[in-house]
Image (tube, rainbow, N blue to C red):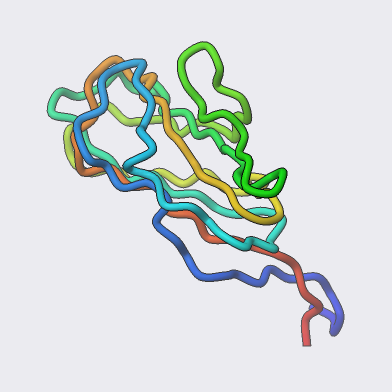
Length: 145
């Protein structure tokens, strides 16, 4: 690698969703489970879903990730995602047909400048256990030394 080539520079990983209850098929995480990613200046990030199911879901079913921008006009926020109004879709985590804890990466998601929240929608065919989390590692580019 030559001096000055673009390389990743990672920010601090933040837990943005912590499960507070089981998440039924088709259900969204709730605002009480969300921790905002505040004062973000990174353009992209890597997300990781950690989750388990008491009954194994169908292999390849998905858990979807959405973003809600907050404080976008002074203290006014975008509407929180919900069924029928998902808003800013970031990607999907494909699940395995197992009951053990899964760690599923979703690299390169777009992050908003400033404050934002994240929500998941369980689109797997089984109820997700309450032990789920989503973590975001913000990324940017810098010149190599």
